[in-house]
Length: 422
Length: 141
Image 1 (cartoon, chains in turn cyan, purple):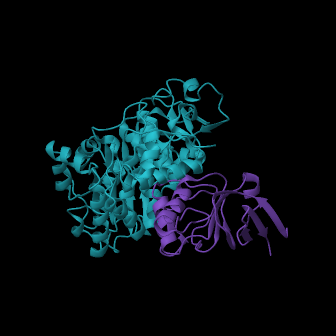
Image 2: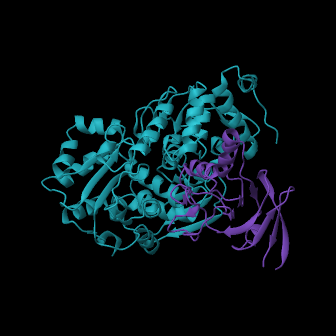
Image 3: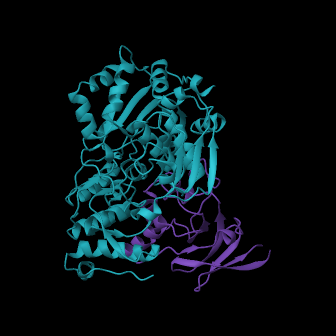
């Protein structure tokens, strides 16, 4: 397939819009060739995952673009960086690492972007609308933008998101096109999954882990859910399914905007495969999120993806009148914006009185902030539970928000499995 | 099995000849590949603990994090990347790392897609050679 370029594209490739735009668009064009796109399309917003600091190559890429005078041409938010810009010294982040990560922050911040530093950009006011063509990085955010907001992005990696933001262009392919957004696999919830369990805060996390694992790179449709999950439950589902699998778009019948009915979700074609989800599979999925059984506990991590204002609101009453055990740190990771709102509404005081800590701009996976003596972690996030064993070489226990708070107070892991019949 | 020749499709052109490291399970390189050593560190993955550096790595596709590309780019720069990667389809994340490596360092990582059936014939330990025509020559000792 040959790629048709507009006059403006050709002019940008010649350098008429500056050397950074030329570099950015030439990468977009090469990748359009790789995926066999026959045209590019305009995107009108971007979210940049390239901000995550990994090493010298990523920094060289960012600083090359910055040196060439790169400026984004659409409203652009930034994902987490490698450090909490103003509080990293409170943790074990090596100074040299912090210096490099900060250079990367400055490079992207200087391109006319909004320094949001969050993996949950859909919590911001400036979030995409239904049908909007966007270029988003960050796996959980991609799934949320496509599925919950009905905006349209491919599953974009680091380094590409910024090329789209600078050039304003993306390959016209994949999930950008309506005809590629129909469901492929049907998951049907069994009657043995109680309504009460479905309303619990860890149900969608466990469900997402299971669906991601079985779907891999397809588009799953989930049917048979009762009630209406809130955005935090959907966030948890997105993060889980985009970690155990490569899910960039899903539909929940009667819940997500492109799935008012099963027929709509599958765009009129019958599902290739239908999978029944019962309690046994859900229990197994919940068990898989715990790695290295241990009731010892050094740290509880909440806010993966970043804690929302609604989550601060849900957490505050659970902490009231209690204090974390002297041997257990209790950490919430969130964005500057959400913590600002939480402070204004008096919700942070509850966390502080409990002995909890707060990190913004980054997280414990993206920043080497945890000291070596912290070995046993607990979280309510499937994404964190998925990556922590390999990235941090720590034991991890998965539990509900209530389990996490109870365990922090007790100084050891406590889990209530009654809703899971365990 | 002896020697077989599988028809591959270049996603990114390049030649390689090395021992294969094969999994049917997708992998996220962020949290899954230590770019400083080339070790697979996803502790839930079938290849956990194996070193892919210098090998021909066969994975159906990527899963998980958007940061897979950035991790692979670091590995290419650090000389700890696989010699080539075989997949079952065009994987955008791998391809972009190779394209950006070309842009920054004038070096590429060869990427070849195989049919699912042919991919299924590969085994870890096979001697694999990528020819200029994109054929994947497999010899099993």
